[in-house]
Length: 328
Image 1 (cartoon, helix red, strand yellow):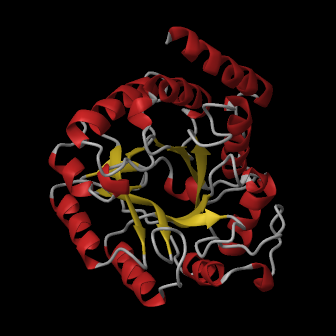
Image 2 (image 1 turned 135 degrees about the vertical axis):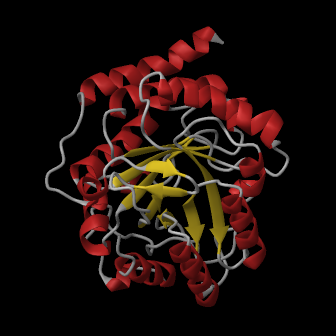
Image 3 (image 1 turned 180 degrees about the vertical axis):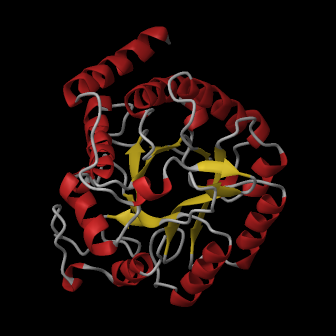
């Protein structure tokens, strides 16, 4: 196993050496306003101590929609959509993912992270894996390097387990994995926010809240798709917050959980009201032109931004309105 870790780590280290030590924001923005995000009780707050609720976009799996992982796309999302948060989804196990191509996927992820810092918006570094507890050593290598590079930047949030499957146990699988990865991050970055996925595709936040991780700056992941998930999932989220857990919605969709089906505008409105009421930050899935209802872009849209209304899907049009109107 040590040989595997070194093999995976070497391309990452070389990539980071080429990329340089850091990036300086071009102009003051939302991160300058709120600073490093921190958990305070069941809320995520800024340097001023007030709850912070941000709206933004999640990129699609890095190995399949890497063409959108560009500085121009990030800049356009900030400028035209008023996105305050982006999520770089580092695909791990599927064809072309990090396990098979660490250097390629790291190049895409760091391009988005560097662009977010340059634009002074927040960025989630997401280990986009459904079985992360089976790839612990690789996750340790990945997040150790990300923390070495970005640990001094208040822009960065680490999402260490995208969506544990329904058969993953919080006590047996997810929590022990998270504790190891968090320790690796904290060795280099003692301060930045870490978000931990929860069982059943990051819906059982109540299970995590009942047995929390002992780190002062950890929140838990809630994912929903408006066409599939309704009041019962919101009830689980409220139970988790009542138990004292802070929550971040790092991925949500306007349609069904499979990424298709009609855009459910009524359910989207209910979810937006819920997230406003509880001061939750959220990223919409996904910056993609895949032929799925959840994609914000129609096939062939530019990977440099500058999208016209005709480039946006029905989901994209709805989500742009949500993000533009969110405020912060």
